[in-house]
Length: 121
Image 1 (cartoon, rainbow, N blue to C red):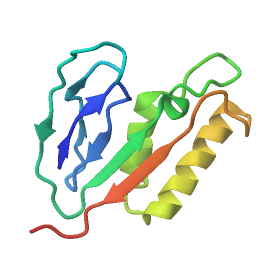
Image 2 (cartoon, one colour; image 1 turned 180 degrees about the horizontal axis):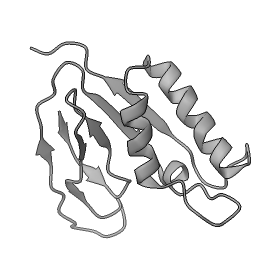
Image 3 (spheres, rainbow, N blue to C red; image 1 turned 30 degrees about the vertical axis):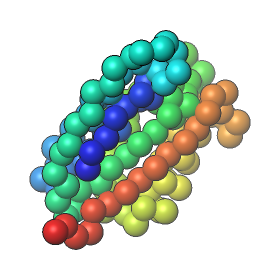
Image 4 (cartoon, rainbow, N blue to C red; image 1 turned 90 degrees about the vertical axis):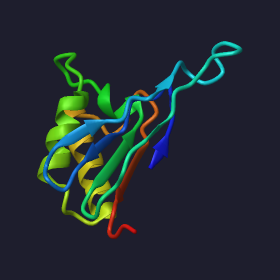
């Protein structure tokens, strides 16, 4: 996988062995300034790896105590529910964020992408 992160939350990659990597290569928010240089990275993917991309509407969803859902809860979810089919994982994660915030209408953009590597080579 070759990627560049242009200001969004860094995707999380759960390896089949259970380790989670944060894909941080990139730079500033796209379009903020002229002439900005971006770093790209290439990483190998292996069967069983799961990639979670998300916008800050997921990680920054707030509950009634002004606590964010946060990246750590995303990591916990990724470790706990990594074997679900992608559409089920997305539905479960969306439900978990909504349950955490106590509100079905989130205040920010909310986008999730879940991909599983089924074969390589």
